[in-house]
Length: 219
Length: 254
Image 1: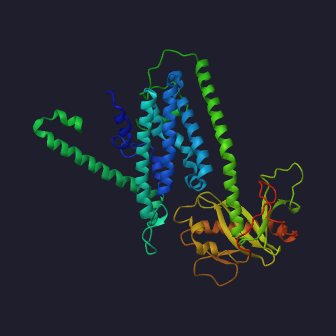
Image 2 (image 1 turned 180 degrees about the vertical axis):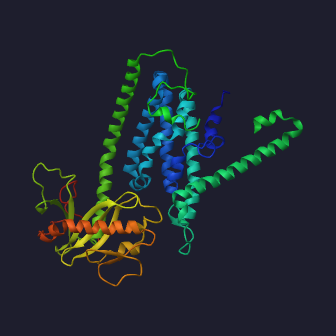
Image 3 (image 1 turned 90 degrees about the vertical axis):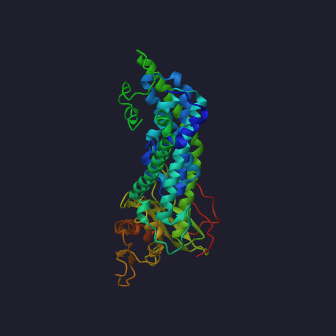
């Protein structure tokens, strides 16, 4: 694996390897709780906290964990942070905690989080692991907020609970129901894929006279 | 890395390294070391969770109580005060016999208006709705046999359809002044009878569940409520505690 710079570690998860939009990880919460912006934000923040906390701790104790039980140990660490997030949300923002319901506890099985521990935090220094986790966590939050904004505007005709279109707007109820989650994610992925394709095409065309070899890296 | 890592994560097969990406596996580690590692990690995790819980629990309880108090005040149309009564086989009592669990005991709430006269009972109930159990509270006036109001405390009904049992104010307000037992009717199909509530189009099951909960609770508790002799109103707004009789100053006397 090529060595990465700290900036790359941070930015990679936000855009180029966005957990939801590129790696298609953590889709369960991304589909389930993004029916409003506040819910998306709370889920994004909770996941961010769990991811950064677990990456920090896993990276810190990685040399003490025997390889045979590493996955169990990671899950234990992740589950502890999730329980903390669950209690804190219930104590500080009970209404949002009620809305998110079981999905807070299900952050434990968000494979994006375990994936970052296994692929990154268990092999890298603490500082890099935190950067990587912060990047992925932010990328996850951005993806959730994109979906939440889209679905709340169309499905409830509001943003952050503030009505946008007045009384005459008939909300598309389907957008806040589960099918709306799939439609939204599909549409976002479509736009994303089209945009990436177009960018790759542009780069190929621009580099064409100078040879094909450099095209691969740029794409 | 796709969904694969979650499979060994359940701890069924910790030796399986076929998913790849992990650090190289050393030849053999004593199982005692593996067990010790997980035991220590588990103990530390438990300790941290207990500490956080001790901080969070009072606040969570406070939120729950505040929500219940607000709901009681709402379904009794803002009484000046209210007191909790425990439901026992012998009727409603203010204090449970020694040794009973006051936290899990079934409770109803008796409201009093500004002049100290009883202003109705708030009763909670829970039954399955369309998705999950619906928990609600309703106010009931024994003398007239009419409902004072209804509020859903907790439900996971379908957003946009079933959750209208909370958000559709026509439905919610329809319970004010309706006489029990309640009959749910399709919108516009009512005969003008005093025990009819318009159900929500598209949320028939949820509406029916709400009406069912109220009817069943009144069936079960009706005699106890009728027989109960309301004592005098609590003196001066008492400080609410977890299980003693709680009261709160209403903003508007009924």
